[in-house]
Image (cartoon, rainbow, N blue to C red; front, side):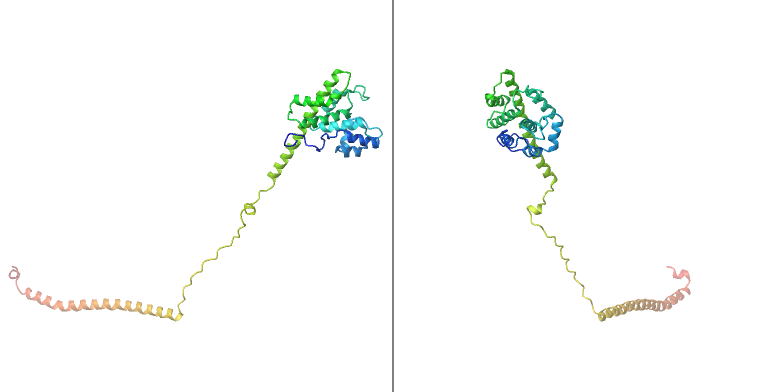
Length: 281
């Protein structure tokens, strides 16, 4: 289905615009198709077709050749199988043509029914009315040349075709939903692009150079020796000054004491010879 709501042509299992016409050309040229040729036309696996035959949904090939009746049924099943279960497709075909394998109860050739389906899909995609009544209008226009003495036959064909058209539309929508979901899943699984790869230039991280360390100027060994010697001299001088100072103080104190002592003694002696009552004032 495109942006306008039309069914996308050429998808596997989708009814072809030309209907059964190209298959009829092959059948006229070959008289019947082999299994591998049917697989090439329908896109189905050989084991799938053989399984449908085994289950009775498709008639057995004649001499390993698939003729019009088998190929038309295969094409119809293939167009509806993604939306309708295979067992129900078989019941739908029984509703149209009965259960008789000899075709005695059939009201329409299945190749013709397939052609009606293809033409109805084509005309429906060209209109804006996709409601049930709009689809039925298209179908009535497609089957206008259908002639059958049984009045119920046209009703059954119209109902079957209406169901088939909506099934084909649902199949097409389902495929597109799955395709969109696949794109989203791919985006989720793919790692996000790095910012520097898309918008920003890649930065080269270079470690900064260490700041130069200012080295102290080494003093000559001779200068250090002089300083050490000077310190020793000063320390010694201080120690000597302390000792001399203490000794000087002691000596001075002793001298003062020695000079003062005779005066005090004489003064004491002078008073000692005087009676106490005379000295007392």
